[in-house]
Length: 458
Image (tube, rainbow, N blue to C red; front, side, top):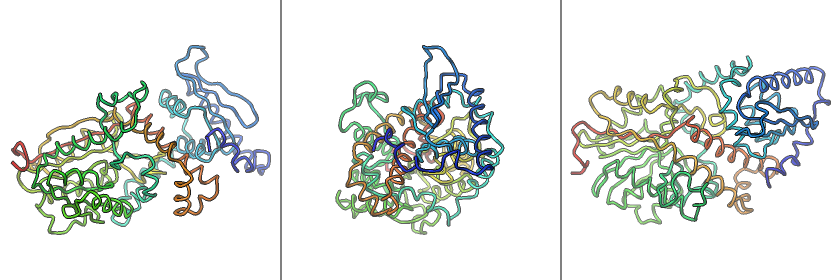
């Protein structure tokens, strides 16, 4: 079902403004007024056009015909105003997923928000500030053992779902686009072709393996298995691998892929929290790789995470390679509130910055590691997210839908099924904008034992 057809879903039959009680109508009218006023005062760059269910059209921002950015939002249901009033940007994402608003180009809407975010943010309501404060506290204390599996539950959504948009290597992390694929903007310049994403992910995997200085005979610890691609690549070099995960779905498919590749005797996949690694792991590994898993650790457990890596690595000639989504230094804070990603995809995610993570790692393990390198891959993520979105569109077939419905019977309802789909596509666009506007980045840190040799197995 196309997004433009979404207004025909059952949301159109929900109660409208006039059927609410007097109290509801009064609150809704107040919410609408506040949101429109915020847009009037806050949109100063570009042009935003908002069309109400009644057909009334409001235009905000620049009026010049040659304005660089024009965005359009069609409000399908009055509940849109209440969601935005109460929850600001999270409310907008909820309204979009629920079909209470739509746009011909949701990316332009989000880019316009970034252009005007300082002005618009100043009009946040008391309810939004209270909600934000509550979630800052909640995220800060949500990384205990008992919560850790729930924090990565998105990876158990369905292996078939991930197969529909990931590359053949099943890498759910940032690739590295080379000139062979047209670089980071190749898809926008007519260079998209089958196998591009696979090639970019192989480039990234090989880069990470090199950073970890792996050779035949090395033993690798991987924290966050994914679907086994790093472990398989290391095994091909002649390494043995212990990889740990908190996702049952990932463990099952990773083990299948490892068997199919012929490396079951070299790789063990453990369903295990990093805090529960067995005594036999102590000082046993030449290298540790952990790709885009740091976000789920939580600030209060970061020293524990660093300590467990240190504990598992050999005292000499060992390397740790970590990657994660980060905030820029200019906007990074320990106190991070709610947003779309934390609410609907990765609960309680806490992001570091490039330098804060490096400083924390070295301070926590004083004298045990030195910084080998810090690399920023952020510019490579937008094209990846666009490709994931296209692939999910191309593979949104009746077979995939049947598989999802078998796992989630509530998706038999076409409305809920489309909400599910829109949630994923909104995520791809939301994160594309965040990375392309350097609201977020993706950093790779390599830490090595002091005075380590050129190779951990030299």
